[in-house]
Image 1 (spheres, each protein chain N blue to C red):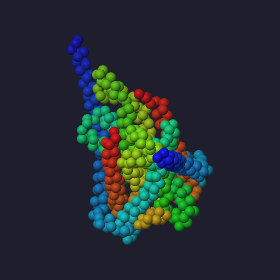
Image 2: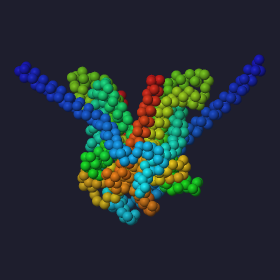
Image 3: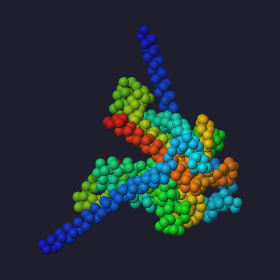
Image 4: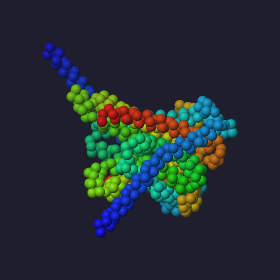
Length: 306
Length: 295
């Protein structure tokens, strides 16, 4: 009797132990899938990029000033695409950084808890709107206004994409900066007040500098997001890769080029197919570097105050 | 001596009111920065509604895309979006929640765990179009799935996994340690603790995260264009191995056409897309407020 109960007990125990081990192993594999995804991305990009550089010299890729892989006379200088990408991203930053930073300071230093709870979710809606909607808005609302103000504006132009993108990124800039500002210890603010500083002086001369690395991290994340953004530029910025700093002109970004090729019927082995992976590789490396920098900047700022 | 002090007081007072005025001014400007963001949001919504409202009709749901704006609809796009959502959810939810449980409850504190964590954080920052290139190279070409719903759903699942993992971990972390200790003290295994206690208590918060991830997936366009989802589909998709289009791709296609009538159709499509997103977000907020347990 006792032995059967005991053996039943141990059987049950074994069963539960086995279940636990299976679940542990399975969820471990699920978690490993993220590593697999990164590996997959690097493998796929590298694979086609190597094939691409067998046909095109890496020096031409980085120094030639013309990008015409889809034309009869093919040139493979990626600089015009990089130029377009950075031009649009810089414009977006001109909108997102001042507005986002001001919004962050207001939410963290000035707004009452009640006001903060109302304003923040409304602002976050901006980040939840699909990018194709921003593209629509940029092309059919912002561009006509720009063309009224500056008649030389082309139908597809960098500026309209920049403005729409800036508002899309605003909540990211605001929310990461606000986290950094809120993480500054109360004692620093109290010390400033005790020295006779006004609220404004405390916010801008004590709290903001103390949170600077967090704000810098927010900035880098925002740039990285702007560089990788696709649909707004594919709709509103155009398909003309060129070296220009004029935001009223049509440009082409790296992402918009990938979309342009994907929309056409590109044969698998063609050079056009390989170019999108080479451009994708460059885009991936650029955003990766920025994400890593932002990670280390954030880490430093955390060690300082927590 | 006293005149000097009085003079100093006067300049200080004058200076102080100036400093305070500066502060007040700054507060107003900062507040306007937020208002500008909100004003932009309202302008966008009103613009889309004015453009799209005349084009809202039952035809949008019953008709396939067409060269003629009067006959064009979103039938295949809506069905494609539903198919894609369901397939993505089936893959991404168990894997994402499972990975979240592993990292929060089971994972030992070692290098492999650290490595996985850094990976997840990094993947969340990878541009969506890069996932499209991964899907194109891996699922469409190497696995030979072609430009099908299943290839699109797999790509989308990888894209939303980091979001589900991160929100699952946050939800699980909010469950107090005492709950776990109580169950462990009664002899439960760590899996039983997770299954019967931690997951039950954190379910509403995990659901909120899943809904947010799905609403991200429903609006994504770039990765699906990259894997080669088409813009013109004139039949109902029947299964995971059919070619497909989705709502945002159809909107993109209509925006790209020069005929302004198609822009109206695109705006109508955006209204539907935003309505779906809004209801999903409302559901997420409702879940968070009603069901979430506060400790």
